[in-house]
Length: 401
Ligand code: C5P
Image (cartoon, protein in one colour):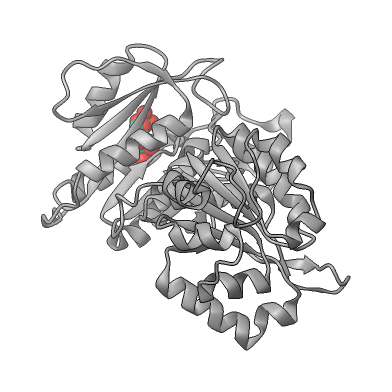
């Protein structure tokens, strides 16, 4: 993507150097445009070196050749302003174009991300509120931060510029196509734990990463997302997602039943334990006395139940983690559980779980020939989001079972 990084004159400008570097590392083409006061905190040469592109400050500067303000405004996919100082906010919202950043902002019609940074009193002042309201009603603005913490004055309060990684995440969110606006999705994720006693469990190596990445992607596309996840899920909690933690398969089923009426789509990404101890003990069992033939009971099949009951009223997507005959086994589950699509994925000791390589195929109910492909889990999440934009919500009545 082509990004303009507008840098305002505040001490947080030093963090914008890290941001410039992160943007470039993520593959973006970046032009930095600084206010005059920003150059008192960080030199233009720093941004020149980090972005590899000339830096503009004044109206007459030509980082992109003659008429740079017009060229930059037409060139960019996104504009970031970090730090957004109170003075810069006022100037941008009033449409003042006394420097290159003001000019570029007036000419730019795409999405802007603003990361405010100022003392608390300034952030909460009526002037700031008014300027911000005005800007947000007139322009497509995403605000990231400010955070609460130690401010330049040494006082603690709201007004710290968001960290570069939060701004990167905000930019990513802002630029995702909003193809799932109005959709509501329930995702099961991670493993379940089935207790034998308080210190012994039956579980599997699932980390819940797929479920978390799906939640992040679908919410960035505009969907409302709730994740029902098992214990120890390595999720990067996404502020736009609702999380419900459970332990066992039975608890997961109860949670799914509880929330299902609120959604049009269910994605079963959890690796649910197939069995649980028939008689779990409340006290730790001494190992000398443990019966190695501990009686087990089959767990409820959550997606199986949901498929039987909701196949006509909800979009249902499952996962099938298999070591062999992956596609055949996945197709069988697709039909047996009445799903609209299933993600077949190969699991083994070095693939499938956690950060390992991911080999998968998305199979729809009408798909004939499909092959497994190596992909990242991010790519899979994006492909599932594309599929969901095609699988529209169903209007059918739920089965009475
Ligand atoms: O474990 P299995 O391969 O049958 O999983 C296929 C799909 O069914 C997955 O989407 C999984 O989340 C779901 N499932 C479930 N409840 C179970 C077992 C599997 O919801 N008890």
